[in-house]
Length: 543
Image (cartoon, rainbow, N blue to C red):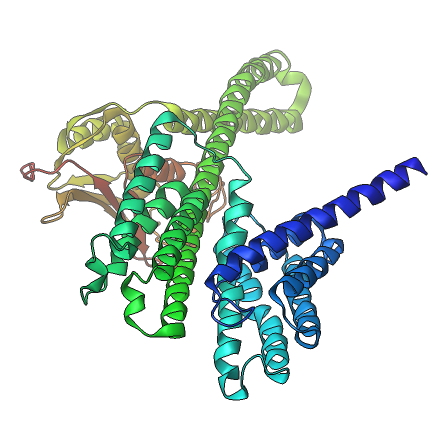
């Protein structure tokens, strides 16, 4: 029972505090009174939305009490005060209900949340209280019906500006800014100082600059941009409140560029300017914050992906090393079995041993290729100046036995000198030449031509490797560069499907790319594009 009474007491105190704050903010707002009881800027509207958002919709009685006391102190007749009370209560309740329904986030870090808040709380909901209030005031004779549209506009605009200025200010500054370093604090104070000085020049009476027929109010927007970009929502709301105080204060004293208009129009223009400043600040802050969050999230994903790739590379490297030893043992013992028990095992046994040894050799080649691929992705690149013709000649010399075995021919054309990793360039050329010699047509001598050049006026070079082999259908372009993917049976052409994958990885590590052009039965051309340092092309002399 005591706990229940404690809860009720806290609730009652909360309602009374809300009503008191509503009354005080309402009295401050009435200092700008344009009609009896109506003001072009209404701070209680923003306070009510903020309070109900924090403490829940059950706090609505505080609005009723605050509006009733405020109407009584102003002297508004009950016939107008009661509808006004209903409208001013429905407005924030409707705002918070819709914001909760659409899952509004009060951090204002997303553009969606800013636009949602403005559309619901500042534009839509004030229509309710403005409509009810304007009709009730005209009905009791506080103002005439021919002025009803101006009264409605004033009411709606005042509530809208009160919401868009007050609510974000309180919602944001209840949270500490993320970066509170001494440098950032000094920058924020400098921004506030410059903004106060500029706002005073625009809206203050001392300089009389506002009498000049120039759009001086635009001088404030660079500071709004500064605050929104550098300090996100905290900076945007701070700039808005500074401009609002000085603009409204200057307007009350008859100063500022907007007072050059007459009466109510001057107030409407002034508070509209405040609303635009607040909206621009919130939108800019949300856009830049959203972009920053996206960049941070992208960076986190990249770090996570890199870590995952590193773990996979380490796993492949370790697993390949661990597989080598048992494979060697299988190879040794299978050879021993073959030598010792050749006569006993018969022809079927010999065939089984042969299959076992071929499988072991294939597995060893696969492990070797995995280790090669792992080293390519992990070994730091050592960039040196490479004469590609000399390098290709070295690779052809190393492949001499293989070239003779397939009765092939390699023609070397012009090749540039580039900046690259020598070891990986040798592997790249090795795999491309072997690929061209291996996939040859039956009855035709394999021929591979390799040449390259700098592309004019660009910091890239192209190296082409063309053969007269069997070719392939270009619908398999993606497949041929995928590890362990083959277009032919292994019995037809040896290999594990890793060579072109290694080529692609090497070109990617050198900020380049590799592509292929092919027609079945007419050969294949591989085009390697590599980034190089800017300079005059150095071409080898063709032979």
